[in-house]
Image (cartoon, rainbow, N blue to C red; front, side, top):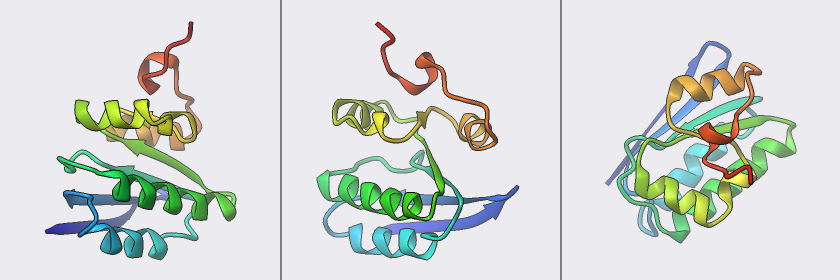
Length: 124
């Protein structure tokens, strides 16, 4: 089962899925991302997602693509090491900023950049 909370906070939209993002729940996640598809600033908080498979990753990328089509900005907050590893291994963190906390994501949305340590990328 998947619950998705969507709220507007401080000029940006927060999409917070709660549960696994897999082939069974991804239609619901896609629908939620479609409802925020015209957002100019979107924070996706994966802190309550214990598992994500390739279907979930595909839905995430599709949602980000829609936001970017309207010149929006997306930042992903993810505090789970297994998901961070997935996002790094697949190169996802090279197409959109991925940070460890919601506070860091808000800072990026507010124009604060992402340094190499926060994004999980290796500078050298």
